[in-house]
Length: 207
Image (cartoon, rainbow, N blue to C red; front, top):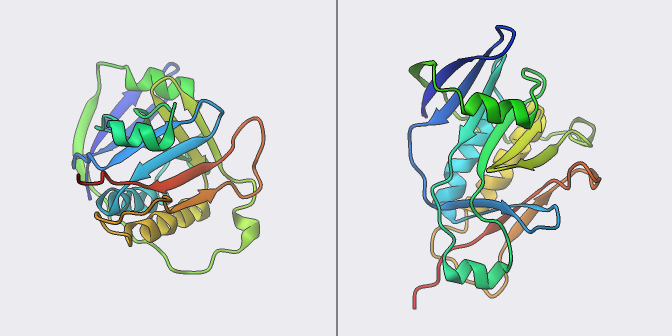
């Protein structure tokens, strides 16, 4: 995948590298249900893209984060299906083994107007290797802050998320059902801090 990599200098001289995909995607929505539950909606094309992003997030380097702007406006059919939710959050992925940064500091970094940037390429490999449960349990933190959903975890959980998104991709772009296929990731982290994230399959039904 092709990315724009921005170099931001934070207070104290620390450099942060923000990767953003150069491919615009309009088949994903991200938000929450106003009860603390983080939600992502998408069709096959959207989840193919997200699976690659999660796989690349597993390999983020020191002081790198992945920023995925969501270009989606919730249509009436989606609102009817899921009700009073927030639908227009962007996705930020941070591998805490490489980069420890708060959502507030990420928000400040995204607002910096002076930066260097370059185009880079990263390969997305969705591993099929079995991941032992002790490597994922209580390793996932998902927080929403202003216009962003921050997903912070380790390499193993990002690979598991990539595999989960890949399974959602298998439904394609034209699957319709009265009940939306979904998969939930929390690994026993149902706490006041983070309730994990649920991936929902959704596509507009043609009338």
